[in-house]
Image (cartoon, rainbow, N blue to C red; front, side, top):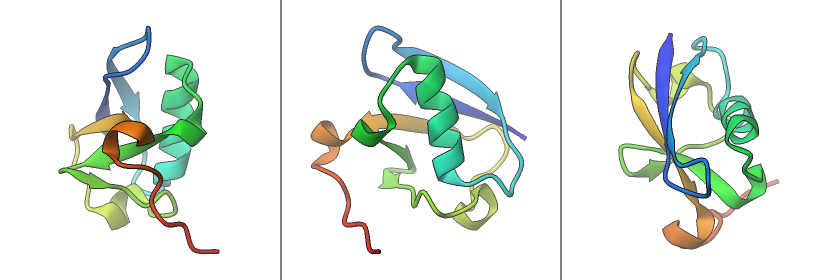
Length: 86
């Protein structure tokens, strides 16, 4: 399935189109997108519908449909890193 990732940060600002499967985790997608944009993954979160996505969830679990647009947002813009439980 195809997803679009908006990256409003850094010199690589733009929209990336990626192919994923429903079993891909949000963390895997974030790593792939960060590599293509040259962004440190520890400084950003993937968001959909105004909410930060759990990196351990799969695309299917997060309810992300085909052709959805996600945003790669810096933590300093969205208010810091979300609480991560061990």
